[in-house]
Length: 326
Image 1 (tube, helix red, strand yellow):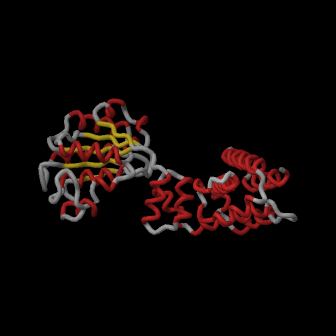
Image 2 (cartoon, helix red, strand yellow):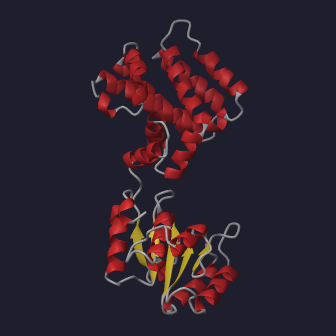
């Protein structure tokens, strides 16, 4: 994998590749951005690019140095992550001691600190002193999802690189490339901007089951002698985890109702559940536009009520009755 492979963060990849090519690598970087946008992947690639013996300013991924970094056992690349709830001063002191030693493989040493915002005050102050007087050849890669929680004095001593949230199209393409069905990949990419979370969703049988229940429920809601309430009661009775999954279920329901609207408007190219186009076209004949818009509004209100600790089953049953009443 080379810098060109990081299509999800092209600006970041270009910036770091350029810094390496022109020998302008900073002594400390803060990679800031949401969870799952590739901060650690790029941090490891930067470390490999520093040590790679086959490519200049890039990483081949195949040489001994690259493979050792991938395996987490390179003697000049060190990692820190929270010990429990926080990064403690003893961890930073041990790192400082390690960084003060002579590099084993080259003139460089690299350390990666994940969740740097979770440092204790003492650890942060110790790191600050380290950043003020870094040993020659040492490169610090600090990763965070909450840059606003980091001491301004630490921020001022790092070059901050912001990572953009992943676009749904990027997540979808990555998941499909990993062998995940396109339909599930596209839906998951709309639920979360976190690639790892989207992958977990798609790999869960429960996720596919929830979408099938959404399809079933939206059909039952428009039938005479509707079985919708029985379907809901059955879900709560037979599936203990449905209560926890209800916010996800409601998100899937919103996406499905929105797709029916797109079919009615002749905008099939915008469908999220594109693999269910035949079903959507059938349901587009039994729902009116006003019913769909009102339904989406009710689902969003129900989701907010549940987040405010309303009884999940009662809130859901109320939603069904409201949709049926129009």
